[in-house]
Image 1: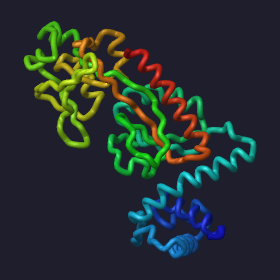
Image 2 (image 1 turned 90 degrees about the vertical axis):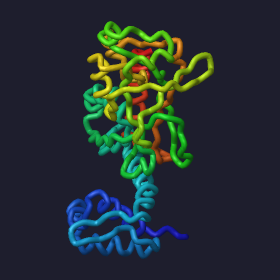
Image 3 (image 1 turned 90 degrees about the horizontal axis):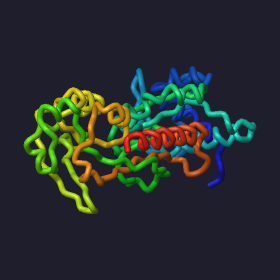
Image 4 (image 1 turned 30 degrees about the vertical axis):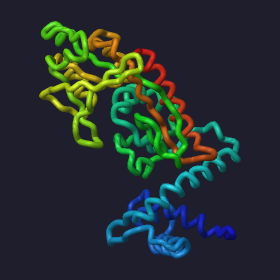
Length: 305
């Protein structure tokens, strides 16, 4: 197939409409008329043979095919933008809007306290964080995704950020009142703070690992949370025992507000990965953010070990 320059133009208009949500706002961004934008989208749809938008008088939404096209085309546009920047001799400039789909635990417990450092380091970056655990379509509308757990999406570039311990902890207040469990089986006599798995809607099971062996322990508790900051605050206040990723807990462990328990059974480690779709020439803003979150992840892990 010979290259059609109009296809590239159409993709640029498509990106503006997807971003703006309607033809009128896209036209303002591009300096075109709404009818000109509409014709460009119609030509693009005819060129590739699928309908990209569902239209209404007030807004447009991406069709299923449009979502797929958007996910594949945006990295290519970003690569062209980066190539143009490099050609202009400004490859070191980190700028533009960066959309990150990120695990809520890492976002709140590790990234958020360090955001002033990143924003000060890169004053031309506009950062948009989307806090979610879900993996389905996690790259839709995002330049980068950050998720705990093993990588399972072969079509994306994957970068491992860290391995963190899974620890069981309590506050000195709780341990003074109820005593410290000596073995995982002792937890049946204690109050657990339960954390809801967003994928299943049920609390995460509690596992313990020792010398290469893993086993699950049934725990009970009257409080179930889905926000890590709530879980940590409740644990510090003495509501119950909490099992958590160690990353992000460094400050509370360091000042003694949280105390690791059952440490002989805390051999489990959990990975954190970053994903991005660009196989060649990822934008400078993507490289800068990936380097930064790995930097702070390593620092936090060292603090919580």
